[in-house]
Amino acid sequence: MALSRTAHIVTAYGEELDQLADDLARMGGLVETQLEKAIAAVVRRDASIKPDIKAREAQVNALQVDIEKRVLRLFALRQPLATDLRMTISALKIASDLERVGDLAKNIAYRAGDLAGYAPLPLTQQVERLGAIVIKQLREVLDAQSSADIEPAVRVWHSDDEVDERYNTLVREMLLAMTEDSGLVGPGVHILFVAKNLERIGDHATNIAEAVHFMVTASPLVDDGHS
Image (cartoon, rainbow, N blue to C red; front, top):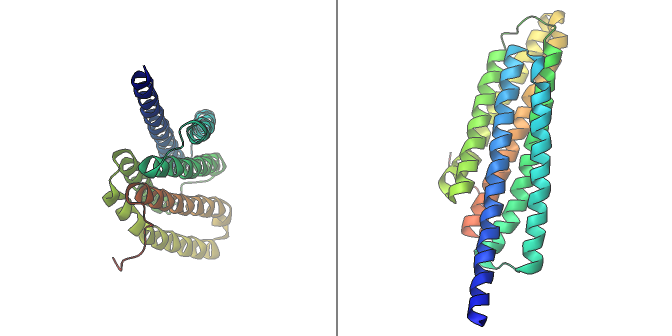
């Protein structure tokens, strides 16, 4: 009888951990789609994306709450140790970063409406390229989390310099264009806002990479001189 009860507890514990991983993967998928749609809306200057983005944000926020509750329940009832402990701690951190990415994606999408009243800007292509890099970062680090594979997480962590470089280049060129043509000041401010939010999303992707590395290896991700 005792053995059966123990087996039941172990099975239930495993199911709770699996559900936690599923919720985190679902949250990541929603945020990734949200970001893709937001960037596409900015490129097209399409304000119609707002309702869809708001609906997805509500789903993301609800999942974060569910993940927090699940983690607290795991701590209270199961007292996870070793790998399971790292997974639960990392899940909290990753969910928090994903929620922030969702907020930033929403902010980006809302700028699409602000840009709708202006003519297309050539630098929008650079925003699209920066967005593509950040989306790739997010996708790779979420895949790393799902597969518990640190290699893509480390790769994303090292790619943060590329995001910063492209962001800085875009800002310089946008400010120069605004200086030369005062008519670009209005839309240029929105482009700078979008670029900054993309750069911040890149930072959150590296935070997730660090959490994944800790989850798998129990050690922090540190610079090894890799270029």
